[in-house]
Image (cartoon, one colour):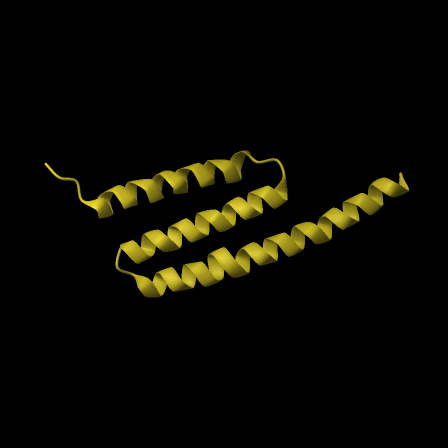
Length: 90
């Protein structure tokens, strides 16, 4: 009995999706969680591509992994600076 290599790749991707989703939930550092979200979106775009939906995969990679992660990182860096200034004033 042979196992289809695509099925193995699906299982690896789904395992990575679950691990990255759990990492997003459990990480205390917001920057690390945003990076884990980028990894999640990238793995999801690979899964969409394997499921014969290249248009959805491109949109997920561009918007989910790229743009949304960049916006999260910019927002986190902006709020971290404000928090440090508030702590310095105390």
